[in-house]
Each structure stands twice: as structure tokens, then as C-alpha cells.
Length: 212
Image (cartoon, rainbow, N blue to C red; front, top):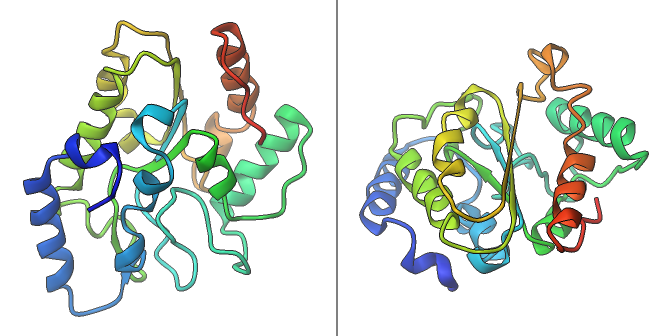
């Protein structure tokens, strides 16, 4: 389905069950069907050096394209992404305006939501579709790979995977912070400095840093 090493690592029955529920939806679902697994397609398991984990896709038109927090080129930046870029500037002094984060994904940043689909206009509307079994399996599978991996868990839903992420005998960094949405960003997301912490961890473990 995905075309790389993830195919053997993800629970195909859970994927099929979730996709059945998606297919039964009568309204618009995001991201487009051919982009649901884009995060896995762009970042194969052996390439993962960072996992940025969010809740579920953007639920407004022309935004979600399969990478957590990323938007399609030409789309206005959603508030959560604006706040991510504010923290990036404060942390690393980097001014970024482009909302498509595919360049991060190609450097080994797995941009994953705990739930991979959403109904238009209804945040977290697919939380009961069983996607958590798929994303739990993805986080668990990464534990078997020897490369250093930093996990960034934004929001309560993402932080439920902290214990799974830590179950590895290889170097791991677990960073937790509130979700970057305007509702929670001032409760500890701002000032959390994830970007510099990730690069310091990678450098300490002999890995290339991420060009944010």
C-alpha cells in the first residue's frame, strides 16, 4: 500500500478497518484518499530521525495533505502552524513562511498524527475509527531501529504514545509540550525550544542536524 518498509510493519487489518469507515463517510474527508499515508511514504522507517506527533489532520479545505501540521503550497497558514513557526524563530532564529513541510519529511522527520483522517469541519471526528492501532504500531516499530530518534509529542493525545516511544534500547529523546493550537500554546508550547533540543540530541549522537 505504501511502497516501502512500512508495509511490513503496520497492521493491515487495522488499516483496512479504518479505511472501511472512511469509505462509508457521506461527506468530505481530509486528507484526500491518496494522501492519507503520505507521512509514511515520504519517510521510510529506516530514515526516521525525528517523529513530530500531533492529533489529527486539518479539517478545512485545501489544507491537509497527509503530513501532520503541514499544508499544501498556496494555502494560508493555520493558527497551529503559525505558532510552530513563531517558536522556530524564537528557538533557532529561523524565519519560515512556506507551510509545506515536505522538506522536513525528506530529512527523516516523520510528521504523523495519532489519527490519520478527519471529517470536514469536525476536529477529531475520526478518533474512534481505530487509527490509533496503526500509529501505535508505527511508534513501536521505530523502537527496533538503531538510529537515534527524537520524539516530539504535542498535545494530550500525542503524549499517550510516550511510553511506547521510550521502549527502545537505542538513543531516544522524548519531548512533551502542549499542542501548538491557540487554545493551548501559551500553556508551555511557547518556550519549549524543541528544534534546538532535537538538533543537539542528533549532533550528540553523531547524526546530521535537521535543516528547519
